[in-house]
Length: 427
Image (cartoon, rainbow, N blue to C red; front, side):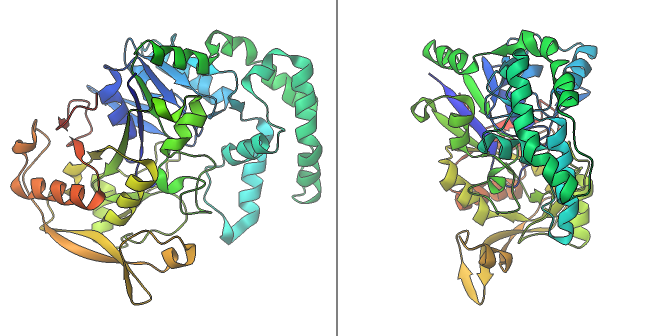
């Protein structure tokens, strides 16, 4: 019953797509369990680069069944466009399964997201404006639209009416916008019914039966631990649970069925959007990391904020997720620095703090305490084993492993599918 969870151990954009793709040929199912098209994975296969947003990375692995779980929020137009783009490139997407319980991002969710963020001004969160937050809010407020509702026009109309009763009041009276017509929304959503029908399934049943048959199931999180709605740097977070516990609720499997939890760590640290970031760099080093690492959001197109590796948040991710392994990505980006700073603790009001402060106020005032590690100048992109790495690169990996609290079982030394060093098998 090998069930693995693979998730981001920082603020997202750690390279989860590469890690999932590495495992894709060995697993039977890859499951997205939360988030929406605010997440993005880049997967490089040969000379081909694929940017995935809603679809699980396993869709690029022949023989693997990709699944969009009940915890995901789905924009039908984005999903169908993504499927069409892959089909045009010769990728077989016919095995995709979508939970009938997944919630739909409606046009009014996108509208509310954009006008609310604009209204916040300087206090804005930095959302992608794709309607993810309002859709999760509708889910919690029990006025959400689920995929299965597309197949009962009467129910769909009633639910859209219920949602717009309040939203139209807000749009017209608070934001000075036009009211949205119920009929228009229903008509637009019904267009997707037939197109999505071949993919809709009881994914909870499918996945649990697969595990009972000893199939290998990989649960793939979007975003990262520090963006978790409960355990992240609130309020500068996403609207769902990218942490390991989210895999259980977002896919409908019990925690006793999870056998391994793999955290993806970038060899330095990045984040997109607003919020505290203790190791953020505003100098030439930060610009170099951004340029060499190609640090631009797959989904948003925004430049990522860059900083040195933060061992404090890595330890936090280990604890919150119960991590059994790390996959360290983008080690090659650090080639060329004579010395590489690593944040080992914070200084807060004159105190040294070695664990993530629970107080948001303290975290906002945290200053990094750095330990300097020797760098390397050798090209590591062709390394096939740990011993192929320069001694200083080996020492850097070992230091990060010791500081982070879980073994580093794989290392990314380049963007390609084959540019990975496997130290210990994940399966």
